[in-house]
Image (cartoon, rainbow, N blue to C red; front, side):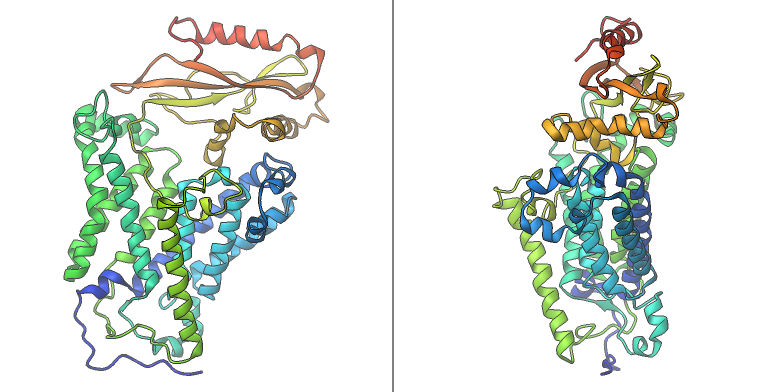
Length: 522
């Protein structure tokens, strides 16, 4: 094996300039690998809960409905689109989890990065209903990870081939992937921050009327309620516009610090943005993993190891055919991704973000303008259903008691009975035909399976109504009277004993929720 050349003895050890702006230190990339790999592993383990409902033929998107709607290219890319059995999906996810663990440990790192990115892409395409912004983070970070030397530190690969790795140059590594990755982080926060700044309703300004955005978001968790109690409405109003400027200015500040070789400036920017994300994870429900992944992306800016044998040329100068081929492939693929993102957002008008047939709408979507406005209202779901023994239960909450009140104990809370990937379920009410049948029928099958109706026939679910409830956000942690809207009625079993069910449920709802004249159906 040909040895790589070591940096020249007179190579400059100074920091600053364009190299740290466009590149990443090898130690920072190793930390990026470890944090991203740990979070990816956690996400994949959590995903096992949703395989039956969202990825198998037993669930809401069976292959018999998916395959007729996608083209040949889509099927070739989506490995998961060829397997409908639950055990097959479990096996694929198990392989993906092992690959994520190996990536974290730095064992055959580049291959594991490629495998992890491909399997994650395939998993996204299997059911695009679940393509949340968390998935977009993993998709792009894993893509650029394929082209980076992430295993030079704290990896099994270095331990096994120590003599080879000792000859590799240290310091800052620059290639098209490092530049594109930093450009991605820059774009994420510009897109999010400018979106908030340009909000027509000015929800992220000090003079927001009636409530600033932070006042509406900081009421979802116990930590948020404590924060509200400490700061009060005036404190949250004061902090609201600072979020916008932290998002807009953090990346330019980190890049400026990199150019000046000022590690303190870079660390200051990273500290501020990570504190923002940690605050989001503590105050907004279902955002913990997303916030941690966002912090993981900032590892690439860390100034650790900047002046460590800094090379004067390419960190990995190609000396043979395969390194040259790798460098060429990196340039082509990274430029193709960046160019594809620009094309999709500017002239690719023929692609719809919700289109299953247009694969590019999923693979090239690169928008991050979330939480743009203040939260005007909160929503939660309830699904009263009748069993064969005549009792009424909450199918959505999987409870024997039907409670129309806002979820949560103590101070008002907007938690839902089914968090995580279930959040997409209520927003699919416009599905029709076989797709609607598969979606709404799954709740019947799930209830019967979990209640073992073969042994307890009286627990069989006959029918349910799916309601979405809504309450406006008011000052001082208050909410308006609850409104309800019937989203869907579904007959699990055509049975005479269920004929009077609809009137009974509506009467019960009117008694429970309509004592106040303002509590009316939408």
